[in-house]
Image (tube, rainbow, N blue to C red; front, side):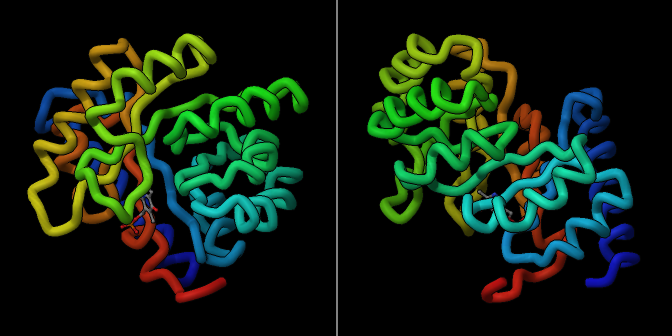
Length: 226
Ligand SMILES: *Cc1c(COP(=O)(O)O)cnc(C)c1O
């Protein structure tokens, strides 16, 4: 994708977000577009930046660091979301670079996270990832354990716990899964709900998403490796 194609894609996605919001009587200003730049080169991010896209999502901490450290020096307005599973030994790097960590998914991450926050004096906003499809290959706390986990997280991190994130199983109607994510968020009065990707963000908006994470529909198919 060249810069012009990325611009056109961004324009189209923003239009589709507006439309999806208006169809269900929501204000599109409540919905943030997270541009998922994983595996795409820095030039793709720069193209999006030049079209006023400042919120980005990355899966891997190492890749996020390499790509965004130089960009953040020039563009302090960038907001970086970590949307992939985090190894415990990478949590400190995640805390250093992210504005939002969307993938708090297990009890074993909580003490290292607290330590990283204490050590860096920095605390990103935190979302809890729920494995709504109960899929063994996916990260996220299982729905049956989610209440306990969310309560533990809120006790430990208070208002820093800002939202719920999830990914429905592929090739199924995502709506019931989106509704389940929304009901967890409402139950705990968490303001943010991160759900919906290139294939299903309009349905996610209809179910209450406040962030949609869109990758390939903006940047094209992902190259196999950076
Ligand atoms: C890759 C990824 C996305 C973006 O997926 P697309 O289908 O390319 O829009 C969104 N969320 C997560 C967690 C991802 O890993």
